[in-house]
Image 1: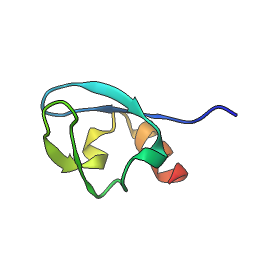
Image 2: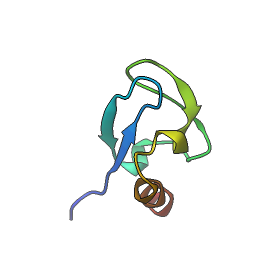
Image 3: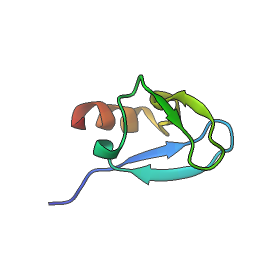
Length: 59
């Protein structure tokens, strides 16, 4: 079975990366960019609406 992932992008430094939903907090929780350490709600790091929906469905 293939594992799902979501794509993230930092709204401040533009770093992009992928992560599995199980490794992330809830969309409304604060998350820190691994590159510049910007703090925002995780939902603001989702690259697309589809990535946000995938996160919500698989958590």
